[in-house]
Length: 342
Image (cartoon, rainbow, N blue to C red; front, top):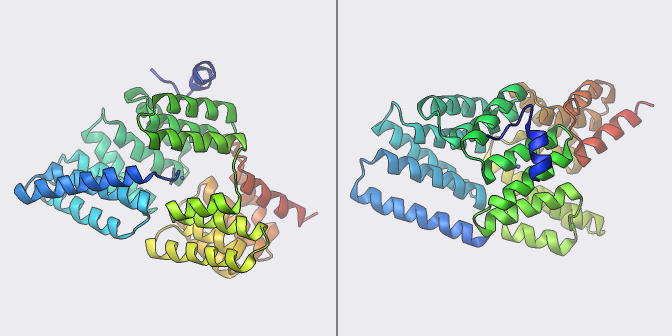
């Protein structure tokens, strides 16, 4: 049994997570998901009343959206999951998991929490249902609830999905040795090159071994044109003295976020650093109204600061580090906020 609290620290020290955040997927992962979607679609042409197949197709489309950053997959996922629930409205745990994953992907974390709870009620021994809850509760700032769901997930299926979530749990609390230990366990249990790549990337991030050169970040953005990778590419261009090219990447990241919808947190941070401060504050206040977590606390603190309201930012900055989170950008924000008031 894998204990998160209070014994997981000791366990991972001996044995050596959201998001709602991800590594660059290999082309093989996308191809595999596409093949799975095509197989399910072929099955549904033969047996269109198969609620389980519709649910599986919906979950696959959510994953395709995650790895391709194509918002069309969200609409396809919703259509498939809606059909599954039409055919089997009660006790359809797989469809509940799919709806929860879709809600998490769209940053509707309150809805994801409810779908996750429904899934866990129907499928109490399903690790994926607990994973939906871990992600939603973490983003909603329910740290106690997220810890309980994570423990249950680890008990049910100690593998890459649960160990990476455990790593994030520790990282948010500033317990980096234990976070590395959890990622090492995840790497040990990785069953595909994509999973191993994910683990190694995040181990390198924790160790500070990230190559943020223009060429490396350009390749990342080309392989997976996500807002995260576009921002990294933009930062590398900016540091290399190419501000016009950098601004184009930041603008493209914001365009993607608007198209995907729901991720006002990332939009707030991009706008605060590279766009309109007033827009950044609107995004941050909107997100804070939906969830009060360390993530939204940092975004709101930074948005207030860039709008010249540093004194108001301090309580939110305090909250952002209250668990022990020591993300470099969060610390940079905090140093600037406190420094401006000295």
